[in-house]
Length: 119
Image (cartoon, rainbow, N blue to C red; front, side, top):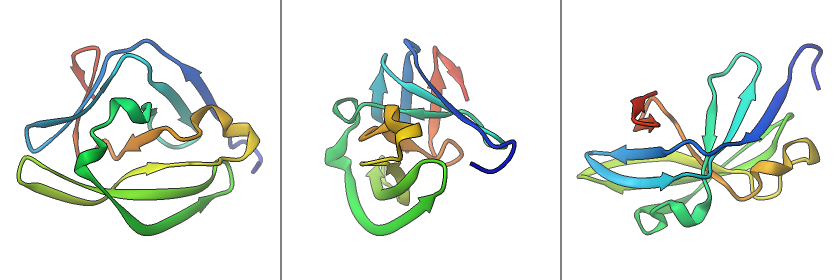
C-alpha cells in the first residue's frame, strides 16, 4: 500500500436503505463499512439485500491497488437510469476480502440513509 494509505473494513448492524427515484433498491441490517484514506465511508451490502432485478451489468471495470478489480452495474428505478451506479469486488485482494461479492452505491447519486439519517 502507498505510505499513509489505509483501508479498514468492519461488519456493522446499521440499518441501510438505498433509494433511487423514490424507489427502494436496497435495504440491509448487515452492511460492511469500508473506511479508506481520503474517501467517505462506503457501505457494502449483501447481494441478497439489493434489488438486482433493477440492475444491468455494464462493461466497466476499474482496478484499485487497495481492493482489486471492480465490476459495475447500472440501475433503473423510479423512472431514473443511473449508469455505473453500483460496483462490486468479486475477488478482491486479500486485504479487502471482507467485501468480496458485496455491492456498493455512489452515495451522491442515490438517497442513502443509515439508521434513518441521510448520508
